[in-house]
Image 1 (cartoon, helix red, strand yellow):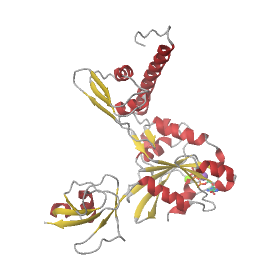
Image 2 (image 1 turned 45 degrees about the vertical axis):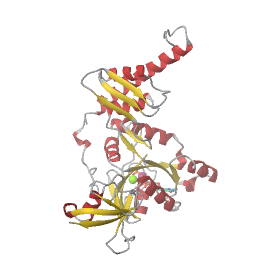
Image 3 (image 1 turned 90 degrees about the vertical axis):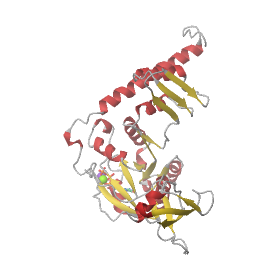
Image 4 (image 1 turned 90 degrees about the horizontal axis):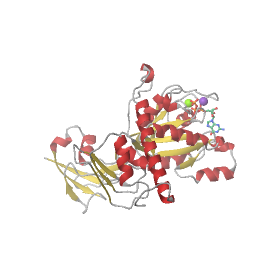
Length: 358
Ligand SMILES: Nc1nc2c(ncn2[C@@H]2O[C@H](COP(=O)(O)OP(=O)(O)OP(=O)(O)O)[C@@H](O)[C@H]2O)c(=O)[nH]1
Ligand SMILES: [K+]
Ligand SMILES: [Mg+2]
């Protein structure tokens, strides 16, 4: 409504409420960030929590106490982690390794966390700090306990800036020295408007910036972009102990998005979980080939997404990049097969590479 008279028009009342909520959320996010910033206790670090990153990827096991995290680690890796029927059996971070399709996946068993973890309840803060460093989170849930645990844990992780199974909002945002706020969008926006964006920015004391929405984002998503330091992480919800529930219930849980049902006790569906985990890790496997020979498909080089030819070189030999002349690549990353490429060429899953030295 052009005149924006809240009391006389329903559209305006709703719009005003929307603005109010948007502002309120911006404020809340700001206070929460202030609250979480200083790590209060000096004991927040250490105590077995800073485990070295190793292998090709890292997976963190997050869940309430006694859902079966340690049982799972002991089953999937050659590391034994104590499991027992009482809560908080595990008190530190216990690393193990899953070997799968030629990759070494570091699996971290962690203490159980409960509501209020983000505020430092139990070892919540340390556990969440480790979760932030993972490539994928496995949220382990007790299939007999209902959905409350899942929602509570999601809330805990959300509150510290971890975004599960979401991609970074497609918003271009650049603070400027002057010139006010320039706002544009390439799509129709149903949740944000120029006015709301301006109000939110003012709340963060930003008066000069360039904003371009390339996606129909919510005020929360816009706030995430302003605040930055969010981590966007794939998460698998793993319902354990399905040996304790009905077939109907198993069926219902298995159909939930991003969910896998298992029983560590009866070793049920663990292969499928590994397959899913591999999919969520989305690692890039590269095969090497020597001149005049067939590619070696038995020994893949495993890299994270977004790896370049230079990354491949470093993996083969430390000094290879400095002797590099060019590479021939076959696969989906090139227009022709083979294509001659340089060090900055981005590799894709299952590409074959032949490196030519100077
Ligand atoms: N019925 C059933 N029990 C299981 C299953 N998996 C684990 N348990 C039992 O659940 C209890 C807790 O297992 P843990 O592995 O210690 O659980 P945790 O999540 O590591 O617990 P904390 O370290 O205390 O947070 C143990 O008594 C396990 O034997 C399962 O698939 N089915
Ligand atoms: K336990
Ligand atoms: Mg445990």
